[in-house]
Length: 422
Image 1 (cartoon, rainbow, N blue to C red):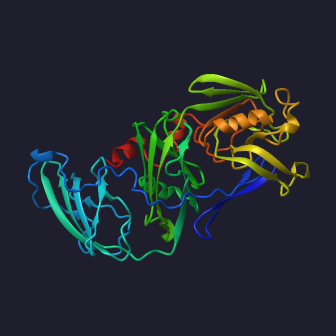
Image 2 (image 1 turned 135 degrees about the vertical axis):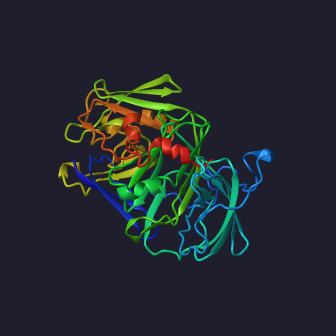
Image 3 (image 1 turned 180 degrees about the vertical axis):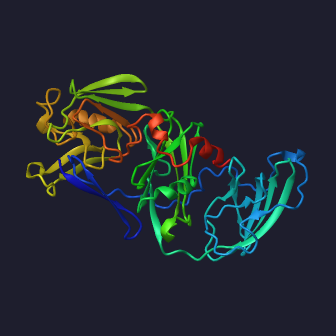
């Protein structure tokens, strides 16, 4: 079993290095991050700022509302949210205008705690906001403020989002966000409150942080419903963090969830059972990792697919695990190099004994059939091997129960749902 380093490509020269002691059947990977999207920000609701949620029956608003940021405030982050400083007041409407006359759209959080612009503000600009809020005694009040944003910071936290617009994913596809360097525990709640996910049809969900703060996953208690739309906004540009660092960019994407396709592997029988929409459609013989390089037990998801590739493990510290091999129909399951792939050299062992370096070996015919069926985000569960899946070695959001998963949230789940964008 070798020790591998996973480099993640980030902006310019930013890189994240996370050493993992893992079996590598196919070697390591440098995953590419989703490019900044120009699509409308996800999860911001109706961008209109003029209509009252109470319709025409709402009482006329009066003055006397204290607003944040305060009038004259300078060096505000471009991620600043507009709020009401008056105790017990809940924001219902905001009209925000830049010094160049640009009107900024956005939406209030569901709990009325603040109003979130639909995109980052501009650096070194002056903005004026008129805020309407409902006070604790039911009165509608207004207030105004004028403030100035800060200059663009030099010290940034890199981030990435594994979701592409208009792509169809499997039912186990988590929303995956990565950070370089990792987010310190004291900063995770602030970051998490700026990571918005909307599902259509609505389904509950929560975030979970990997221990070192380099990854956060969002998933539901159960697999996503087929046909779900995931609209995501990771609204981090200008977020002030510790050590003088700031979030680097906002990232938005909208993906679709396709049909339910599941793979289950039992090490005892050396068989993979394949299900489509809950129905057993095929049983395949497999060969898993031998005892010295065992496959991981747990629920993983297909992370990427390559019809042909080369496995190059010449940097493995164990000479017995070094090789260069052409591979067909490869589907990545872990960062450490575990794949499902065609292995015509092990057909005689498939269904009988384990001979791989950690991968799921299947015949050429079966590998081609699987490759034509699967999507990124489809789940595979492997049971009964000598090693448990390491958290963070791949998209491991489903390798724990829901009760365990929500313990990894930096914010109580009920609180985050209450503060989500309305």
